[in-house]
Length: 148
Image 1 (cartoon, rainbow, N blue to C red):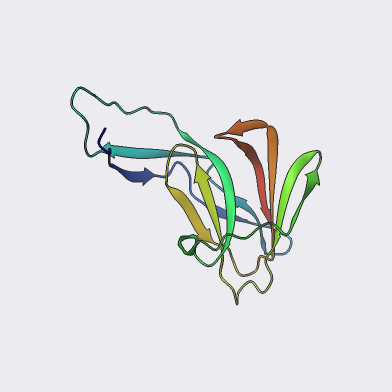
Image 2: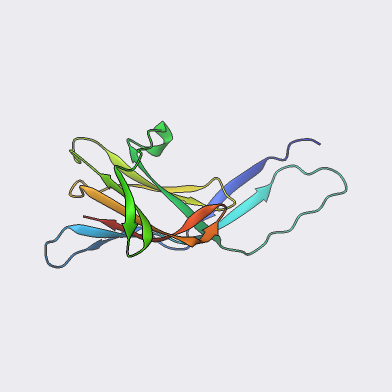
């Protein structure tokens, strides 16, 4: 069967925003879109097939931290993995942030679209907490992402 080429255009369900901690003025939490809507266009289809577009919102499946833009493929391994209130947690210590460019990437189920954003230079710590009891595409659900 011939290859089906799919062109993806994204409509973001939410905005990536950084919350500001009122007490110290530093961003401490990333409010990330946990669902997105992707508009897909079928470029080619084999005879006899037909397509339709489903309206399911695509769920966040994982978070990645990168040194440099994620397109450069410099994903960082967490510096620490443990449990927080019984939930698995990954921690990245972002040394020399400001001199090095750290980025966050949000990956979603059933799409190659990745939302990414440069991490503010004031941030030196990223924590991601997961719920292993619920999974999407084989990944535990992301419960929370915190920055300090």
